[in-house]
Amino acid sequence: MVFQAARPNSLPQVGLAKVHLEKLRRRDFVAGSALIDGRWIGGDQRDVVVDPATGEVIAEVARCGAADMNLAIEAAQRSFAQWRDLLPERRGAILRTWASLMLAHVEELAVLLTCEQGKPLAEARYEIGYGAGFLQWFAAEGERAYGETIPSHKPGSVLQVRMQPAGVAAAITPWNFPVAMITRKAGAAMAAGCPVVVKPAPETPLSALALARLAEEAGVPPGVFQVLVGNPIELSKPLLRDARVRALSFTGSTEVGRLLLQGAAETVKKVSLELGGHAPFIIFDDVDLDKAVKGAMAAKFATSGQDCLAANRMYVQRGIYSAFVERLSAAITRLRVGHGLEATTDIGPMTKSSVAEKCRAQIADAMAKGARVVSGKQDRVFGQNFVCPTLLSDVTDDMLISGEETFGPVAAVLPFGSEEEVLARANCSEMGLAAYVYTDSLRRALRLSENIEYGMVGINTASFTGPPIPFGGWKQSGLGREGSRHGIQEYMELKYVCFGDLVD
Ligand code: NAD
Image (cartoon, rainbow, N blue to C red):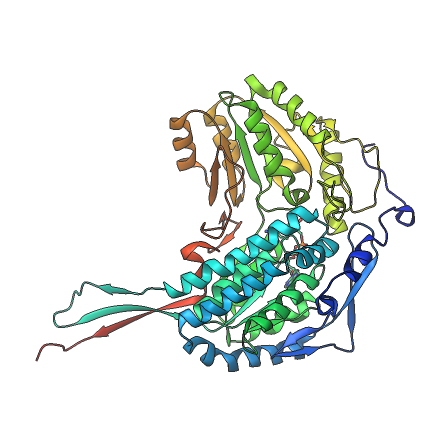
C-alpha cells in the first residue's frame, strides 16, 4: 500500500494558515463580501473557505444566489456604455494601476492564495506576478485593437473592419490558478471595453475578492469588475440565460465546459473554453538526460501537478529509458511535501479531496495492470488531500493514467521505439492542449512540431507560458485563445462597414 490515510486532528500544521491570515495588513482581504455594482455585500448566507492542507475553516464568504447574479448583470450592462467609450489609453491606465497594486501587495495576496489553494508560497508569489502581467499586457493590447481597411472590390467605395467590444462578459474560473485565470480573462475583456462578472471557484474565493478590492482602488468603475461567490450551477444559470451576457470564458474541466457550451447556445454567446489537458512529454535518446529530467520535473510537479499543462504521459525512448527512470526517481525523492506556507515545501496538498482520490485511483489501476511504483512511499503522512509525489514506470496505454488527466503529482513513464510510433500514441487523445518534445535533432523537432495535434508545443523546454502567447487547446481541450494579441478578440465583435457612392 503506497498511501495511508492520516488522522486530521493529529496534523502539526493546523492553525498555520490562520496565524498567517491574522497577520495580513489588509484585513479587508478576508472580509468575504461579494462586490456587486460597487457595493460590498456581506449576505445572510455564508460559505466557508478551508485550508486544504488541514481541513480547517479559515474564512467565510457571502453566498450569492441567482437574484444577486441578476443584479450584477444589470449593473454590468449599465456600466457598459461608459466603460466602452473611455479612450483605450484611459482603460489601459486603470488596468496598469490595478497591476501595480497587485505587485505592491504581492506578499499578502500570495499568503491568501496559499491558504486557500495550498500551493507553495513561492509559486503563489510567482502567480501574482504572472497574473499582474496579463493586466499589463492587455492594457497595451487594448490600445492596439486595430481594425482593417480592405482593398475594395466595388468601384467608388471604402471597406472598413472595426473591432468593437461585445458587451457584458462572464468569467467562470478554476481553483488551480485563482488569480491568474481571473486577470487573463478580465484583463482582456476590460481592455476590449467589456465589463466582467466573475464567478470564481468556491474553493478559492478569497483571492478573487482581494482582486476586486484592488480593482476598486485602481479606479475600476462600479459594475465593470464584479465578483460573486456561491453555488456554481445557481450562479451560472443567469449568466447563460441572459442575452445581455455576450461573452463567456471558462477554465476548468471538459465536462463542465461541455455543459456551459450547451447552455450558452440558447443565447448564442461568444464562448472561449480552456479545458483539460493530457500532455505527452516525449524524450528521444539523443538528449542531454539531465536537461530532460529537469524539464520533466518542472512540467509534472509545478502547482503540485494541478496544472492543465502538466506532463501526463512521459514517453521515453528505449535507449535511455532505464537511466531516465533512475534519475527522475532520484529527483522526485528529493521533493518535500508539506504545508504550502512552510518555506521548505515543494508539493502542497491537492486543493480538492476529489483530485487526491483520482490520483490514488490511477495509481491503484496502474499497479493492478502491471506498472511499477519506483518512488512514492510516504514516510510522513499529512492528511487526505496530500498525494506523495509518485513515479510509475512501465505504464501502458490501457491504464487509466494514459487516458485521463491526473491533475496531481503522479508521473507516468512509458517506453517507446520510433518517432512514428510515439507521434501516433501522443496524438491518440481527445485532449490537445500542450505537448513537449525533447530532442537534439532540429529536423525531428520541426517534423514533430508540425504533426503533433496540440495547441501549444514546447521543444526542449517545459516553460513557455506568459502573457504574449496564445494559450489554448485543440480538440476537446477547448475553444479560443487567452493571452497574446488573439486573447482580446474573444471579447470583441468585428464590424464591416462599406462606404459606397464616393464618386460624384
Ligand atoms: P470544474 O470544472 O468542476 O470547476 C471549474 C469551475 O467551474 C469552478 O469555478 C466551478 O465552480 C465551476 N463549475 C463546476 N460545475 C459547474 C456547473 N455545472 N456550471 C457552472 N460552473 C460550474 O473542475 P473541478 O471538478 O474542480 O476539477 C475536476 C478536474 O477538472 C480536475 O481534476 C482537472 O482535470 C480539471 N480542471 C482543469 C483546470 C484547467 O486549468 N484547465 C482547472 C480546474 C480543473
